[in-house]
Length: 94
Image (spheres, rainbow, N blue to C red):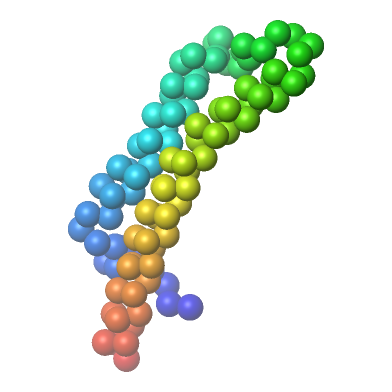
């Protein structure tokens, strides 16, 4: 497999990756702000109410699902483009 080197990355790849990942980090920051006390998660569900706790966990995971999926797709697209550049570079040098 062709190795991707620094020169294979596009001029705007850094910005595209950070912009695609920003929604993930923003959601995590929001969850942290509203649901953490110091370094501990503080669920809103009443202690002992496992059903409510599971619902809360699912809600948090759902909030993260879309931005993570979109970030993965953006990163895969950028890597695909860089790999094509690497293959072209390798063929040109051969």
